[in-house]
Length: 119
Image (cartoon, rainbow, N blue to C red; front, side, top):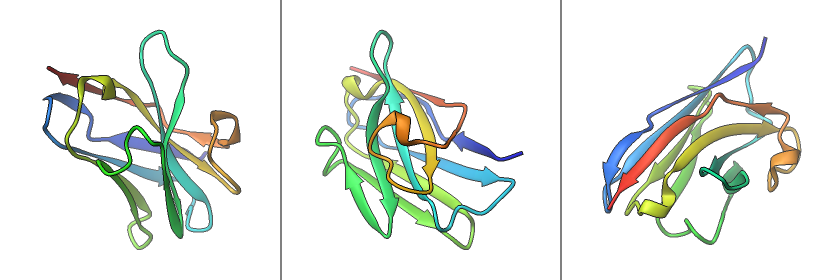
């Protein structure tokens, strides 16, 4: 069974940094588009960033977040710098054989990891 396992969430203060990791199990995702979405309480799940050769970012995180992947380790990362309280959400790892700009594009999801940024 394919699983995406996230790690690295936590409670930080505004301006701090965190790095999230996503490690698929059950298969390699080298040829897949992988990315991150987030969902804050009472809000819809939204796109954060994606990577497949090139990288794509939501405007709200561009310049602060960096997505990367290590194919040798079959792991994807999201480096989050200059965190703001509005970044507080559950962050989900996702994968798709095609595009990954919308939640409905994802074929696989992780279980989510909580990121809380205090002011």
